[in-house]
Length: 547
Image 1 (tube, rainbow, N blue to C red):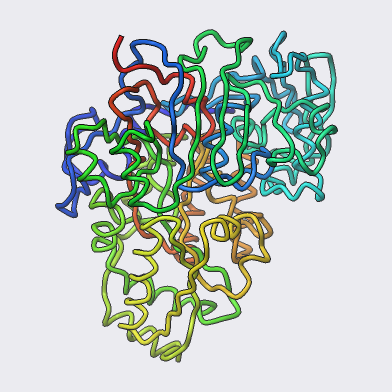
Image 2: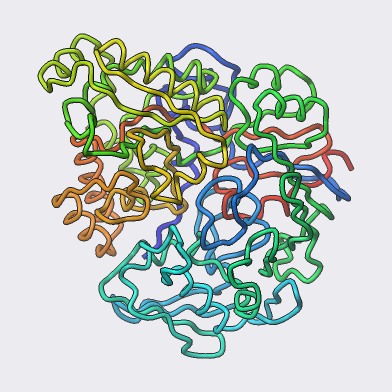
């Protein structure tokens, strides 16, 4: 059973949760508890567009490593693909699940889910979507040759079958609630089967193409320069008919250069604005700096349990030595709060009325260097080395890496920082071989559905997102119970148990939570502001700020 995400829960994201102010969109001091940064409010959308636009330019902090939906597992590729490819279900800017390319589904028994497809939907080449396209699209995730980071989401799938011209049935080995919900994310994306066969290994690369059903079609991909999308005149959903003719994505890895692009108008807007530019952008008069709902928390993921961090006491000591409030000031512009768990409060929307209770049961993050030193001594870890990977991909990564190195030095650990290029950093999330030789990685753990169980599946033994191959029998047992539980309250309670296990064992060390930032130049408006933009056709709603 799917549960819609409540708007009030979304607005009570990390930045607001620590205040006494009601979640009503009222102005709140940035970084509640840090006392620094610009004032902000959290809303899921910007003001509606007042007219059409011929074109707009959107800034990405890195070039997408792929436009293959089955390989997309990071912000840049999903930000582009959200406008080009669509899923069987859809997550709205308010975080609600609604029909997408499927008009609905029914669960005929605990192990059988039947999707009814929307009739008359056209791919960008003019051909009509059928059940054959859906079957081919979903089964690609299950093919080891694809190398999909979503393959573990299909681990309980016995078969994906066409059971009618507009009907697809998923048969399971055991109940899997998350799989159905993930039909609103990359696992549920539908591409033309003919296009997949035509391009083969070149699909989703600059050498190939993408042929989906979204409000925009891929026009050109000039590798190293830009990606351009053009309006789809035959789009099926009238409420998301594009207001802008073409959308050009540019790739600017340097934070200062990206900020200058916003200020000069060479970029009309962009998500994940560098936190170092918050004050400058807000006071510039060149546009709006907005904050949207976020399901993400900044975390440290342990990559190597054979090394120094294999000892729980060392992981606990490192967590104790981290000055999270200082990190928030330096890495998030003061906009945020220390994280109490790996999954953010904003991710807990399955049963929103229980969220506060779950988090109240967790202790506040401690900052105690002396206690950390004692744990290091008990572990016999003084002077031991660990390697942390960092990158100029985002200023936040470098800030956190330097803070970890300083914390390690204080308690007697030798933390070596190794810097890699932005594209190499992105590869760490999809290529297990790229993680070899590293002990620690800064991650931004987010989910795509209303269910926090989605986050904790990535810590299950063998999951693709379990970057350090952590394994805990109790965790796996509770997870399997939760994923077979169709009652949302019971499933939420089981997920809270997973949260406690994760905090006791620290395969992921929580850092901080912050809202989702977006900048809109003076000539545009209408964009969704929150993290749901990763699977919602956000560019379709952007238009002119003036009539």
